[in-house]
Length: 410
Image (cartoon, rainbow, N blue to C red; front, side, top):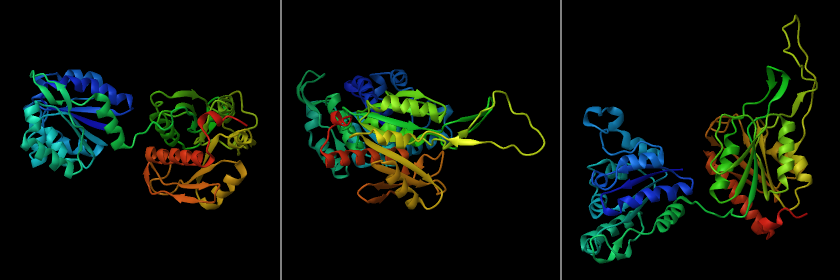
């Protein structure tokens, strides 16, 4: 998830650098927007170094001469790609402009342009905070749904004592997590995820594979890590980078994936088999490149190991989730797979459907569970689908009244 952190001109602006780090610990991608006043207290370079992103300081580009159409509408692009706008510190001036709909810089224009949740953490002199105008502005913002992290009481930079000090970074981070629905409800879990395709060699230069990009499995690994799990990702060949904090094991063939999964399954409390594993492989791969010859070429294929079925036979109390990528009769095939494989949940989709096929960032799936329930989900981002899968796992655990520590027991 990406958030925009708006930094306005108060002494507490230096704390925003620490807030960036704290939010990054929650696996949030942070980009910073600074007001002119904020730049009097801390430089944009500091935030650029911390975030790896350009820091936005001007509504029409960094320099007036650089203004163009792209910079003129950049606030719209930022508004559309963020999951939340956080303003910390929020000065009395910025709060007043937000409350009254004044948009005279990038930050206040972004506030009006975004439909994402907004969180403000005010910081100012105690008299400014307690002034009826500021309190009226705060109430107006609250009435619009803005989340306010109230300032703390204490010694202020101006030498006075009272309310107005920026709230603690932990309080701000917790509010952001609550608003975004980020939870730590998988702490104590070890989640084993498979992702991507496998490749079965025909000869040294050719192989059998499929169109899986690995995006769904990587999203599950990412979501589980965000929620506090230790995650082991067994990945076939993909172009994706492993999510932060995830242990990635690279494999190539179905046999290699089988060995890696069996080796790591005993430590796992949850196993999610999202990989598109080849069902067949050549019986005798050629040791040298097969040359073109007249006539047809026949390949003899044999079955690859059935990883899902093998894990299910020894799963004990572990929760096991499988996937079914289909092109027809999705429900029929998913129910049959659920019964045959011994999984707790099958996540099925029609890969020919719009927004649900390979390489998409979205998916359209239906959950098939052992209680005979079928739960269709609308098209949503794969990270959101991953969250729904993890929610199901927790619901199943509550129904079984088990804990992560007991899942390995047989």
